Image (cartoon, rainbow, N blue to C red; front, side):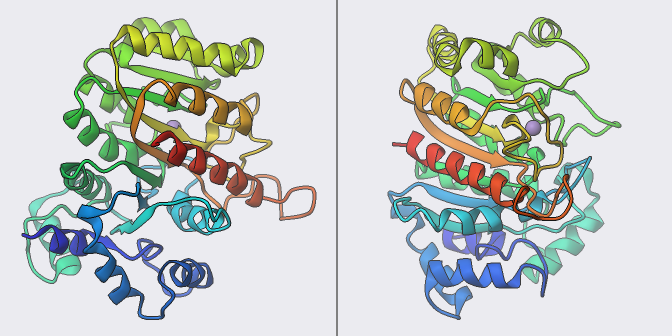
Length: 356
Ligand SMILES: [Mn+2]
């Protein structure tokens, strides 16, 4: 199968990954109009895909799946809302390849029987092509393909389970890659209710693939049933909890992450950014907002400082769930989801900058 055909089957135009007719329609049209300037979005998008292989700009990929979420869902709307928010930043340069196709009842092909895979293949591809059908499996296949032409890719989730599909192809391509993981939570559960792939397990999924557990640095942690010592001793990872960052300052913590990665002789990094790493005062439109976190400018500074020492080859920003409002209806004193989207927009631009 030609690459162009592969992308056309597994992806869809930006915003179309959430299967809906009316919900979010206006926003979709705003984003698609800005990207293609035409009403024939499908044709323009397909045409644009011909440029993928030779495009030098970083790739933007939407993964609108909250199928691995577990507390409050709605991160499937993250990619569309973040796209609209970053349109305001005219200086950002990227190539939007569209969304992963998402069947909202599926997570990973490992969990499906042959009959179901066959049925979904017929629904998605009109015939039984040997292609993945679940969002995490499709993500892995698409990233693998994009990495054949050495792309730098920023993916927008989605709940954090999507990183279990997104990060492994980077680790396969760059075996000594480092992972800089921003989060309020460790995501180091080996399983949750018997399920090994979900928002709380992706880091545990990725860990055995890394050259050394010291190739992951977890930043902003603050809500866990266990303390830092437990996680560091059990898994061999290094964690920089939010209270340490607030006490020592983001510069000092960045230096620690840098020396951790340098000890491992790491040259390339992947950044996975869960928006709940940011304090809930600045980012509450998310499944599990937490107080006591770092502020957007502190997270930005850490991205800036660490990425100056390594080549950032990939990143994701996950768990932005714009329809979640923990503090009642939108008002002047609580302008959510705008506050969260402002933070997401800042982090997105920092992640694109990290690619340079
Ligand atoms: Mn997470």
